[in-house]
Structures are given as structure tokens and as C-alpha cells.
Amino acid sequence: MGWNERRNLSRKERGEKLDEQGGRCSVCGGSLDMDHAECHHEVKFSEGGPSTKFNTSMVHEDCHDDLTEEQRGDDFGRKGHFGADREKKLRKSFDEFYNDDE
Image (tube, rainbow, N blue to C red; front, side):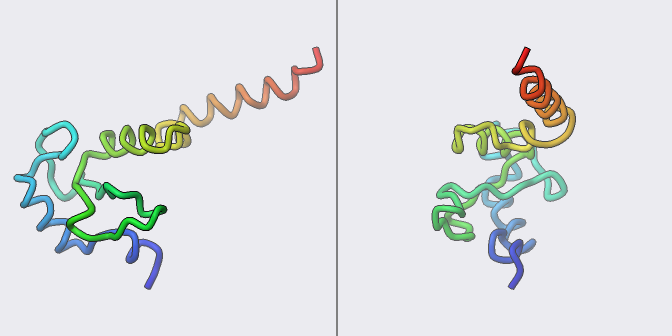
């Protein structure tokens, strides 16, 4: 069993969970479809939270990023570590490191 298989619900389970939520994001209440839904663990997977319909909710990607950052408290969500934001942070860290002696 691979990493994603242990961490995520099956496509069928994700669909059932989304149906249970009335096709709505559990965070913002906005309309949500399978192509844009992510599975959020209420009790974190890293802390032993199971990948079951009872411990998960379906959310938008942006809502999931916000939840992840809020729960971790360390700006680890995708917004903080990937893409343009990550590049800016890396450049700033690089500049601070190499200009520290000035």
C-alpha cells in the first residue's frame, strides 16, 4: 500500500463524503465538486488520525491550505512553501544570510 493509499480516502469514499456534505466545502460552504475537492483530516494523519469518512471532510484547495497553516502554526501550507511565495521567502533568506556580515 503506497503513501497516498494510506493517507487518502478512495475516490468512492471521497464522493460519498462530498454527497454527505451536500456538495459543499465544510469550511466556507461554497459549492464543491470532485475535481476541486481535497480531503482534510480533522485529527491530523501525522498524529494518528485515521483516513476514514468519520475523520475527514471535503474542502476547497485554498480552504485546505488555510486549515493546514492554522493547525500547524508554522506557515507550512502550500501557499507558504510552493510557487512565487516560496521563491520570495528563499530569496529573502538567501539575502539575509549573505548580507548578515555587513
